[in-house]
Length: 285
Image 1 (tube, rainbow, N blue to C red):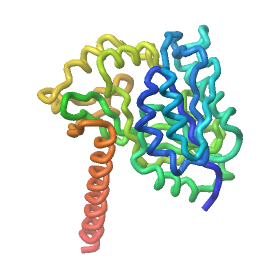
Image 2 (image 1 turned 60 degrees about the horizontal axis):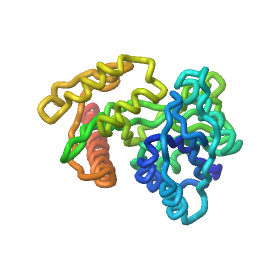
Image 3 (image 1 turned 180 degrees about the vertical axis):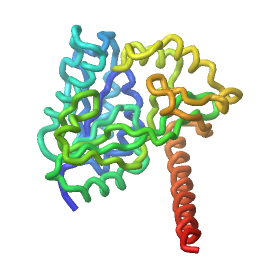
């Protein structure tokens, strides 16, 4: 069991408000937390955004253990693509967080379902061996007046590393890592679960804004409802088979949804265990 420092880094932009739900999922088990914000309040596409002073006041009041730092710098460069700006900011953030330990980069709209278990797991790994660690997304695709449409397709994403050499957003240079370690620790991703205006803003300013027809996909997104969601298959905008189907969960707010998804994951894990148990004895027979 290694006792290396657990360093959590957040990128905060126009969707700053979601960190109110994300920070509580990691705070107690992180040694340090750094929040990166563009000092000129520009997105990676150069669009202006505002963050009220009340946000920073909330951070200050929330940070009872004084483990949060605000890192402000210029993260927009006009001659870089949005993806290049994304990767550049993550490199700058990791340098600010300092060498050593486990670097876990989280976006403000990502909510760990079991951060303590994840930390226990990475502490069991060899801190001296360069390692890239992957988790799995559960993506919030859309919400309506009573709940949310979710995607739980075991979609892997780069989550943590002790060798933060980023080459494409959170993805590190795995050619210089001894180990690429895939886990099934889940992170609930707000992602597409926003208002139509927020989705339109996201599509203009995120790192994949040039990778697909955003107008057509927005129209598709708008057509999703309780009558249509069961018929949707293979609909990821960049890799269609990555998102196979939608599930619907009732929930009045994000904290209650997090708890419901946690409970659902426990049931799924129990079902897998029971299936493995009976399969084992069936083979023995």
